[in-house]
Length: 85
Image (cartoon, rainbow, N blue to C red; front, side):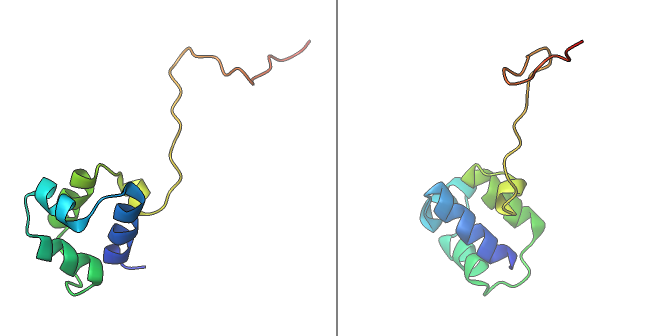
């Protein structure tokens, strides 16, 4: 899957329009559209980064990685069972 397709899917999941992303990223809506539709086949990394940040998504979400659950140090997992003697 190409980066534009991934961006399009991520924006759909985030419930954001191309116009909204363009406004937040301070770029033309046509630029966002061209990337998502694949008209711009090799967009600059910085442009993709602006879109990712404007959408409030992570690179992992862009590539469909499951979210990482982080646990604070010292927090005990309620399901963890201590070793029995």
